[in-house]
Image (cartoon, each protein chain N blue to C red):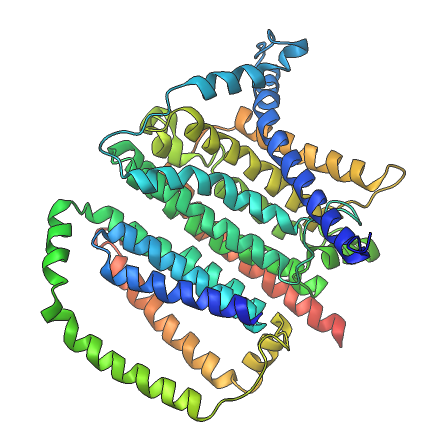
Length: 166
Length: 326
């Protein structure tokens, strides 16, 4: 299980790197889908098959479809690739990369400072356990999140409503 | 003979079974093209292919030969990598989903606790085949077809999941074997979950983009939509992928609503095959008898009619399950 986890995690990191460095937006999205699938694999390796399946269904199967949909409509050609090339000069990405490196260092410091020592994939979190904790201790958060989604739904409806119809 | 441990034997047997199931699904998918054309002929009062072999049974071999020897042409304006990837995804995504279908008590590839979710995941990924094919072809008709396909599939997948949640709530498991067992002990889900069955069937037809939901490839308006630029074996993979989708949805309908392999007298596999065959015929009958609706009607039917219906079904099922639990 440890091998599966690190293998999938490595693929996720590499694929995400390609998302950023790829000049063709469609190929970048393809790499993002691969990255999400690899993250789902990580969940499976950690013993959370429900979370893994939801990751594939919601992120790879629904949200990314909408991303691809929008990029398809934009009709990006060689001009967009040229623009990407100009944006990817070291002067632009060096600053954020350095700051992110600092964050990575902090994360590694914390991880190696206090290793949890837990073994991967020893306990399996099934759908029932997820449901019980969602509607038990986290009920308030779930309700708040659903209120937020409802607000987004109303806004989307308002924006998409055509004025001509009564 | 030290290495021939029972564990190794079990692994080899499981792999063999998986390969047999894989091959039979693909062969069924390929043979369906002949079955469909013969049945369409029967229902539309004409012959259909009846020249090659007895009853035209070897038509599929002739078609295969034709497809293999066609030029496998990639248009120069296409995005080569994604153009090649799309047919592979079209065929494999739904084929992989077959992993979770329990065929008989002893046959079936994997016994996953998240079985149904695995199917949803694969159905979600199969959208990309159409999307990528349409985009990579760099063709107006293909792009329009895949835009329609993505909008249609996303809309119908929303309530496809909700339609089955009633079944999951009653059986108390995502595991397909548990669901079959529950139906054997209680009642086939076709009766308590009739609304769920209707909506899942409609969603299944839409997700495999079969007639009357074949908006993405509407011949008359879009000249075959997303696979207009494809030729030879790449097109063949889209073609077989569609039939694999039909077999998969039929097998799932049987598993989820018609008690899977259970039935009197006949052995389990015969029941499973008979029931699945029935639903495959139903898919073909739909194509033979119903005209294609307008695209906006398809979309509003999904959001305005089917989605509230599945929500209502889930609400009532939830209330009944809670009432029974008290």
